[in-house]
Picture 1 (cartoon, rainbow, N blue to C red):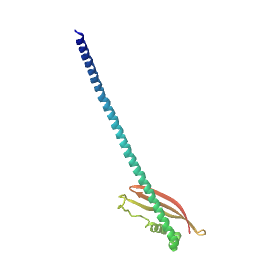
Picture 2 (cartoon, rainbow, N blue to C red):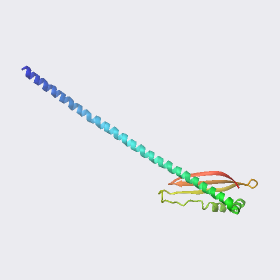
Picture 3 (cartoon, one colour):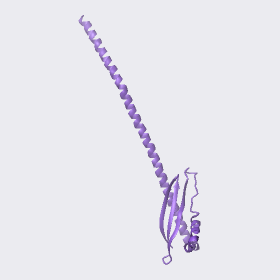
Picture 4 (cartoon, rainbow, N blue to C red):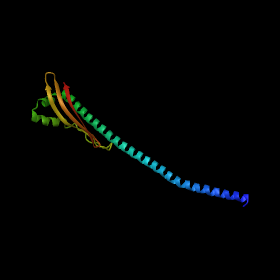
Length: 172
């Protein structure tokens, strides 16, 4: 063997060793890449799930708040009617104040009958309304001209309901 052939043989063996090492590395790179892609896919899926749940929770809270404000609207409607009746229909308020127990049930239902918002789905696509559930004269003070009322109003929006109950003192 001449020195020139030895160098050629050593180069060939060195090249075959480096070729075999690169084949071994290529085999380990694929599982690492698949693992990283899998981790990225799991992260994206969990982020998507979290965003979907957050949006659904937000929609529920928003509907509950709208239902609460519908109930407040019903309460304001009742206050408006009470103030109007006190100023312009004194006889009607006196008949409510002076009625016996059987008459009071009928008069209360008639008094709150029109304090209902008919559903209007044309703008939101959601059904909304408010309704006075409870109306009762608790006490009457003729000397100081004060009425104490127990009032309960329910508001609903998109299937969510919220109720407000108040004890109200009204002076004439």
